[in-house]
Image (cartoon, rainbow, N blue to C red; front, side, top):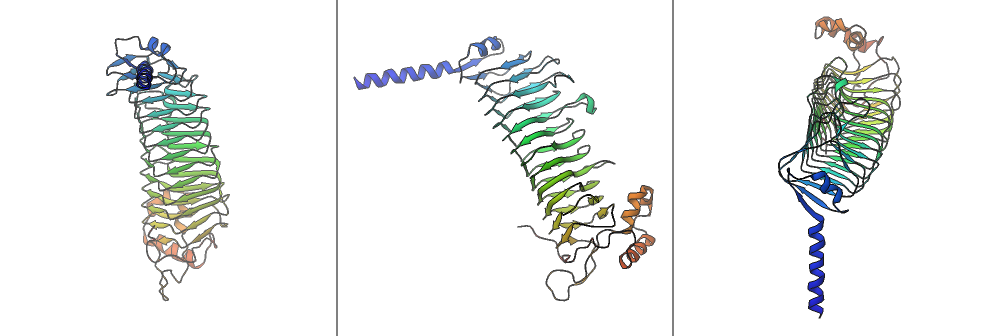
Length: 409
């Protein structure tokens, strides 16, 4: 009797499982299949092209693509709109979300939902790529997003979050959008191991987004670099900011930030490596600034910031400021331009280093002066300015410049 009951229960479980696992082919009416699928179903899409007119997902289901079936939009609307919790979208190629300045159409849009996963998808030629609005506890993982629009006005952002919380964005590649990753009013979220390149404006752009972390990402060759604005309690650690060149380009632009940590990042070949405006209580430590135009631009309204244990190597200008006063602390940094000595062999120079050169102030006021770069006349001006400062801030000095490059642990 017990064996019979066990067999009966096993049969019922198998029946329920078979009912919740549904397979569709391109020739099927997959929208009707989705409408009839019970909550919690897993719907397997076989390879092929599926024409989609803004497919709405309003129940907890998992959509799994086999060998990247194509969900092809109509170039007018969104492709997928999710308005349910616990939805999984995995293994698709999603294309042709139409341009709309009113609707902000996306390849995948998640609205008022939680615990959703978007993983291992390819998104091509969409206005916005993946768009989250008023959602939380979602994961955006290992997706590839590409677009080829030529102007900022005709392109949306790759991964766009608005009014979200506790979202993890990990392992994605974003290319050719307006902003690669965009945050606005986002809390307690993580961006890790992403590669954002060749976007028209910013590789990463976020505003009013407190208590977020950005770790081990690469932002390369974006139109204006990375911008972080009107935010507090942000951690940016072990990221790479590379080849962001242009008259208004930055490795990272920080504006009106407080209580943030910028640690163990790599800034190479940017017009401006790190730019601070209206910032306070920012700790900048253990970063590498290599071969940038301006490694660090520090505006007069940025105060009580700390620059420790950084490496400034072969930059055209190490530090530039627009004030003769300084309310920030520099100590223990390595400066490749430092020519001092270390008689007591403690690893730090015995003579303080003044990183702001007279020529950098002149270039900031008159860019055409750049033609005199590396001339003997300019070197003489810099030497005289070090002895008797007139244009550069007297108290912006590193009292303990390192003799050797700081080795990060």
